[in-house]
Structure formats: C-alpha cells, structure tokens
Length: 409
Image 1 (cartoon, one colour):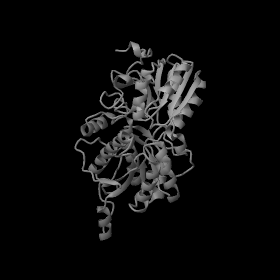
Image 2 (cartoon, one colour; image 1 turned 60 degrees about the vertical axis):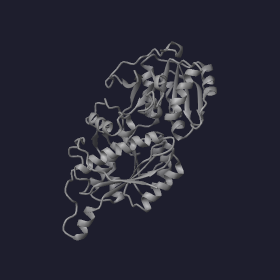
Image 3 (tube, helix red, strand yellow; image 1 turned 135 degrees about the horizontal axis):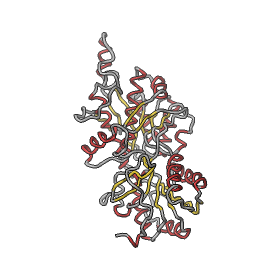
Image 4 (cartoon, rainbow, N blue to C red; image 1 turned 90 degrees about the vertical axis):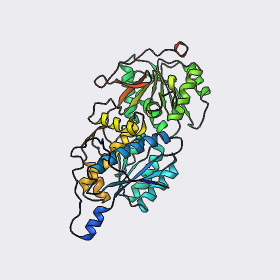
C-alpha cells in the first residue's frame, strides 16, 4: 500500500526565491473554487522504501520531504499545499508497475516522480506512457530510460554514457592506465553502465581485459574477482548497488586484487553509507573513485542549506540521491505552477520549457527529456567523499597511488 504523508513547513527552509511565484489561493469567487483551493495537490512518488534498495529510497523520501516542506511553507502551488502519495515498489518492477497504475487510476495524481532503480523505472515508463501521465526520473541512470521515445518522461540526472565518459576522462588525465576490467550487477542499471564503459574505454586509450556480470543477491564474488585478478587490470570499474558494493570491496581485499585504480559508476559506491564503518565498507572504501552528481560541497547555491536540512532530519550528510529527489519535486512544482492546472498535457509541456536553477544545478530538458547535468569524480579520503575532478570543481587532489591491501593500516 502507498504511504501518505502530510508535511508541515520547515522553519529553516532553503529560500526558493520566486521559484513557485504563487502564495495566494488560485481560485476565488464560487464555493466550488474555494473548495478546490482547499484541497491538497497530490503528487505521486514511487521509490524503494523496503527491500535491498531501501537505503536509496530513504534518501529519496528525505529529499522529497524537504522540498515539500519548503514549498508548502511558501504557500504551496496554485494556492494549494502539496501532499505526496508514496508507493513502495520494494525494488521490484512488477510492484513499480502496480504502484503506477494505482497512483494514476485511484489516486488521480497529475504527475509521478520516480522510481529509484533503472529496472523499476522502466516498468513505470511502460505504465505512464499509454495513460499520458508525465514522469520525472530523479535517479535512474540506464540510458534506455530516455531512449524509449515516450514524450512523457524526463530525467534530471546524468546517465550511464555520461558516467563512463567522465571517469574515462579522469583516468586519461590522471595516470593514463591502459587496461580496465568491468564488473557489473546484471540488471538494467549494471548492464547499461558496463556497456557504456566498454564503449568509452578505447577512446581514452584503455583496453577492456575482463567484463564480468553478477547477480546482486549473491554473497560470494571471490571466484569472479579471482578471474579478474588473473587479467591484472590497471583499473576496475564497478557498477553496483550498496549491499553488493560493500561485499565486493571486502572480497576484493580478501583475494588481494590490487589495481592502480578502484573506480565505480556511482550508486552503491557513492551512497552516504558506503564509507561508514557501521553501515558500509569502512576502511575497504578508502581510495575508491566514483562518479557523483552532487555533494554538500557543490558550488550550486542552496547546497549547504539542503545539507543542513537533511542532517537535521537524518543525523547524517546526504549523497546525491536525496538531492535528486529534492530537485525533481522542485521541477514538478514549478511546471504545475507554469501550467496553471493539473492538466497532464499542460504539465508535460511546461516541463519541456523548464529553465530552473536549483541546488542540483541548472535544469532544462532536451528533445529526449534529458537534463544536461555535469558529472563529478569523487574519492573516499579519510572516510569522506572529496570531489577530485574536474579541476574547476575539485576540493582535493586525487590520491593516485592506491596502496596495496597488504600495505594498508
């Protein structure tokens, strides 16, 4: 069942300026108008609140909560308070499809935000498209989510090809390794990111010497890692969710696999929990490089305020997943305001015209519904993520000589 939550305003809300532009009720005069203005504006959200990807769903929910609180504190949208209607997809495509249908047919939402994984997001796309309901994707990185041809889908995050290009560019300019092994979880997310690096590597002077897929539910990857070790790659590029990322790093140490660069396509390797000792890989996360789309230290205005609001609620600092949800709701609210109604076609048309500055960076969509979002490269240094590339965004220099496991403290 979906989980419904009503939000009170946040005392320390980030100032949104003129983002929403509406603080008075949208309807005046008739009794029906007043009644409509008093109703909450319901927005559907699909994410993974339980299951193996719940850590990411929790980050999503916190991001949505912060955005809704700020928007409602400024009068809501069209004079109405936002009410988020959650549906927990449990990380399962069939549940995501079921949830989408319920949100559209029973809850009558004018727009849907989600899902988390690329696999579940494809199921959502297949459900919203025939029903002509706009979908804003905050997180799914598999590029086939924006290559379906559906005019109803919009993605604010960068995709797998942009991830691979950014990491390959970093490697070319920092040590210029010649060989890379790709290790990916065998669903839409991992497959897409694995293929993207396979295509990007040659242009950066790297040969792919191993390409290994695995099932995320597995708990023993040592045989796979030993096969990779036998190829002696200079780089490993992982595409993994959180639980498997933690296990992979611990078992990479157990088999004494020592490439020059341990790199990753974000996600599990860039989750807030990954570097922690109690919930993540701890010391095994140290020195890993990963793509990222935002950190609290990002230079976009509002980043620090979002970090403060998130930390107040969660007692931990956010990675980019919560920020992506936050930005997705800002875009949805602005589009509804610009559309002037809950008409789904008008909302979709308004999204196509968006040019919005957010703490996630500027957001505007191309003909495919893709936002051109820059990709950062981070490294875990001293248990914290540090932006190390590109140079104009870097807050620390990359540590390029990755110590062998036997040499670490």
